[in-house]
Length: 298
Image (cartoon, helix red, strand yellow):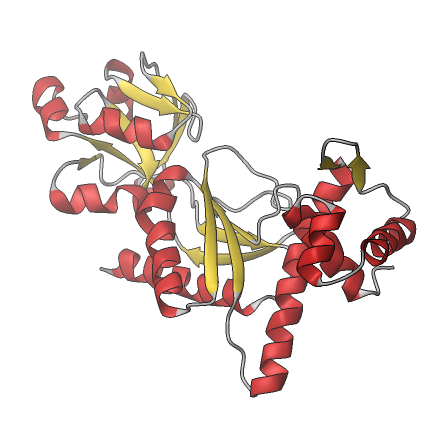
């Protein structure tokens, strides 16, 4: 069991300092004490955490995993101690967030900036990628995704309703004309990216459902690039409504087939546990929900 917080603190300090001796100097401890705490932690976990050599100190895979968890645990302990000593919780620590590129730039990034401005003891590590990330393995506190996961052991909080819509640039529509039915898409240039694939499922009036295999000469694995292509007039794009709201409002993109849309794809936040959720994560979740709900209703 990890029942000695000093061992965890020492382990994290060893990693940050780069060596046992440097950690000892920073913590004002003898090298023998630092070494004993690390050995005790490895004995408790029955795992080798540090690969030692004469040149440098390196974490094993198990050590890297424990290091990520230990940072989170120590931040929560510091937060609890702050609450006990001052009678209130001062949000602090590193907030590690993952999100898709377009949604992250448009909504998650601004929320992170506002949190850092409002709370001096919070810092943010924001990672933007359109691939599916493993929250635990990558040491994240929370991941924001478009679309609820089919299966997950994580806790999910729905932040905003959302679905995909069809959009195109005015220049493209002027050049190629407006489709009047889903079947017309078969003769149009359609931009594809990994988030949507080449098979589009459209829901229409009176419960109508149409599934189309769209052809495209432009395909990528990044939603930002796909949106840039659409803005440049390269074709029609099937994209989450919340990601194109600004371009629609500015007239840079126009909605096509407005009576048709995709299946529900809510914006969700995933995190490991509802219990003992750090204050910084709660603040982030509440701020994201407020921002997205405001965008949806505006």
